[in-house]
Image 1 (cartoon, chains in turn blue, yellow):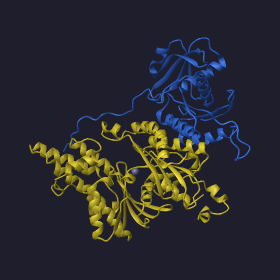
Image 2 (cartoon, rainbow over the protein chains, first blue to last red):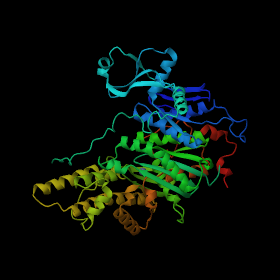
Image 3 (tube, chains in turn blue, red):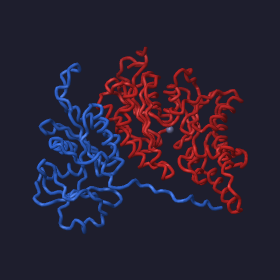
Image 4 (tube, each protein chain N blue to C red):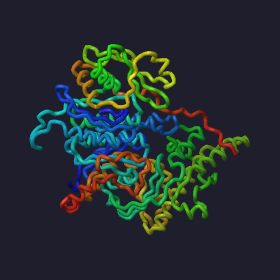
Length: 212
Length: 369
Ligand SMILES: [Zn+2]
């Protein structure tokens, strides 16, 4: 599950094959979309012949895209992923969302050179992660961890580096990253979303004068 | 379903992550994780701080609630969640979790109104006589100040009035700051008011003049009161006087309490409903409870006050409201609803799946028993 950009839910089988990958683009409406997307994807899951039989091939892990992304939407997918996993009694695997975008780039055109994944971070900033190939576990290798770059500085900072502006994350790609992390016994990121910014709040100074 | 449904409720409209579990009207768990301490240094609830805390607290709170209630997720008959009103970003965390949980378990989901949830808190009180309808309800917290006419909990709630600016709880926070007291202001003002004279300073009663009462008979305004307190202090300071903090605190609190109780009892009289239900976190204020009880007794109205743990925002009231909806035969919500930060109180349940209601061969209400 990933709601760092649009809302995306994917399902992969034990062999890594994509069974379903649905999404709703646009940043608004994550809360509205997430439940129906989940339902759609579950319809593609292997199911028991009847209600009385045990599930022959139960879900084993839930992968959550941890951002970066606009916080309000990002949290909805993580909250849904955690609660869904709790309902099934399975673990949540936290996945940096840019890893999933990078994996799709690598799978489709295997760039020989490093490249940057760029996503809109709002407030005239861009979230940037630089990748180079995949590591021994098959996970995109981040050579520069995610940073926020003012939009006006992107040209100067990235220079000739190939840029890939991403506007959608695939749920199935998030799942594939998680599958590889589980196989390698690795933790890719912590349980806190990749906020990259402190909460927007000011500690008040002394009480203001209310003038007559 | 059943008239004793086992429901887990999720409430994240402000700074409390509330998970409640009820079986019908029986409370099994009222688990609350508050991020209040994190807001203290900001002097008020910061929506982004609240939303971050909800996400971190959600799973542990659900697990604690299940352990306390001694039930398993598989045993649930339904999941319930607050759709609004409240802070949008905070509400959405609860909605995401509720949808994830409901779909995961294959259980029906009920999206409900937070304010009506406050009324439902009363039915979870053990050994008290059932809530009698109709009743006037006064809900007072840091997020809302609303006066309601409740004819039926699940079908007929009317908004009589609400605050046009600050919520009463906010006024306590702001005046506490003016007095140099920490957040949250309610208990601090109470402490400061000990020994103070509530009649020492006549602070204004918002929207209480005859000219205001025409249009705003049941509405509240606390922003002018806060400014009046600030001005009064400044004048005294300019005159070189010592500020009588206890008198200021007691007089301010009296002004808030007076307006709240006067308008609530006016509604009781106008509507011919001699019953007043109190709810919301500000009900923790002892002076408010005392004045409400005393003045209601004078006019022969009864006052109901749920236990304070059910007055502050909590998930049990959300579960309790959903349990009543289920028992009355209402269909679950569709999965398409979102957060509505200004959800009107008339929308007791959001996005009821009416299509499946029409398909149902017998109204579920008739099967209950
Ligand atoms: Zn409330």
